[in-house]
Amino acid sequence: MNAALPDVSLTDIAPSLSPLAWVGMQGIDLPITVAEPGCRRELHARADVQVDLPAPHVKGIHMSRLYRLLDTLGQGEALSPTGLCHLLQDMIASHQDCDSRCARLRLNFALLVRRPALVTQGLSGWKSYPVRLDASLINGVFRCRVQVTAGYSSTCPCSAALSRQIIKQGFLKAFDRQSPVEPADVAAWLHQHATLATPHSQRSEAQVTVDVPSDADTLGLLALIDRIEQAVGTPVQTAVKRADEQAFAALNGQNLMFVEDAARRIEAALSGYASPCVHVRHLESLHPHDAVAWAAPVPEGVSA
Image (tube, rainbow, N blue to C red; front, side):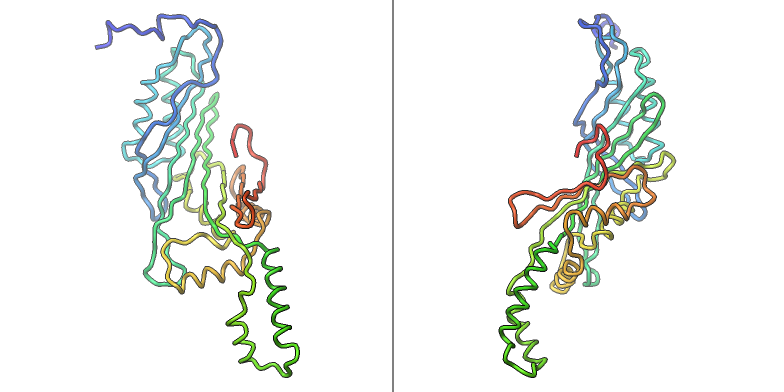
């Protein structure tokens, strides 16, 4: 059907004879399937895909070939390192006439997971975890790397200490001349004055990036998210009743953390993962700016 149609990518010579590192497309809408233990989701993703163009005289690549190959990801088979590697191999093979030797793919999507309430039986809600997947096949070396973002609450240890001091001073002033101090009086005072000062806390987020083994059956997203949430101890909640809100307040009180503490906790929880990178951000309620920390250097070519 296209026999009589011109193809300048084949017939024209590049105006400047130089190779190009990557050529392709960004922002392609695509349905994907993610399968994790007890969780299989059909999701919407945005895909970026490119191959290298080492031949200096070749005017351009064949983007339609990449698009059609990428479309196979939307045919219901769950994402896996093996499947991604095969896709990248096919993309390179489709550009033999361009001397391509490398291919890469980035997927951005959100994993929806149903999370139970802390206390109330039968109560749960949906929680969204942004995910970025980077797969590359460069000169025969395959790499699959995933980044997940998990939200949590952080209560400032310094603010908590300052608040406790104010409450202590208030208590001593109220009971300085009372001896003995009756427990019922103390309880009544606390009921009314225990919030003379409250420590500040804020919604926070952790971005964790790790390598996925090439022979893994799944991407391991849920296991990684669970590690992060268990490490910080205060993951943000979905559906709550008063009992759940009280339990969440108790968790915050027992898990005071600076941004440095959060980064170190998460890093310590990632044993067994290859090339972990941790970036945490506390969206300060005291300041108009954020507090941030990295537990490992940002890998070359990976933006924070």
